[in-house]
Image 1 (cartoon, rainbow, N blue to C red):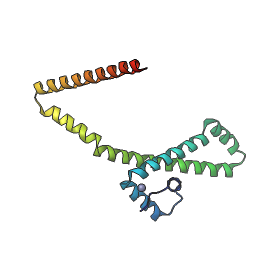
Image 2: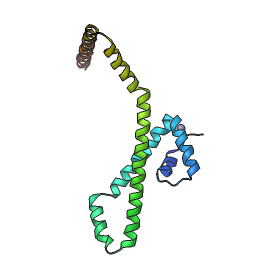
Image 3: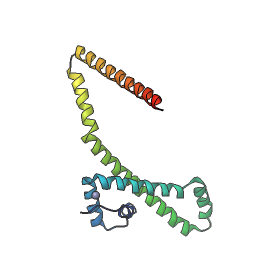
Image 4: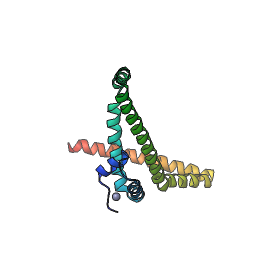
Length: 154
Ligand SMILES: [Zn+2]
């Protein structure tokens, strides 16, 4: 399958595409980082536009106006609630993807690090800690050096 354009994700987010296409999109999302970031962008865009339309003043006006023109406002309210639910669902999906990505990378190296610390003796742990402290100081020194060189060059 080809990459999904942003407009495609927008219609997907709005639940305006056929079910089989939706499944195709989702399957593609599992295997394509590029489309995942476009999808997240589209989702942020959607969420922003939704929050603008549901500001507090608007809600107050809605409740006042609803008493006068109930059917129209009700329809708008239902649409708003539906899109809020859709956005919430998509955030959950995105959170799931993030966990999947994290599980593959960061968490693994983190648990490996914890394991290595736990399995080593107290003495080794101490020297490991010392090593980290040394590295941190070296790193700070190098930043300081870079800053000084930067000033000198100016
Ligand atoms: Zn793609």
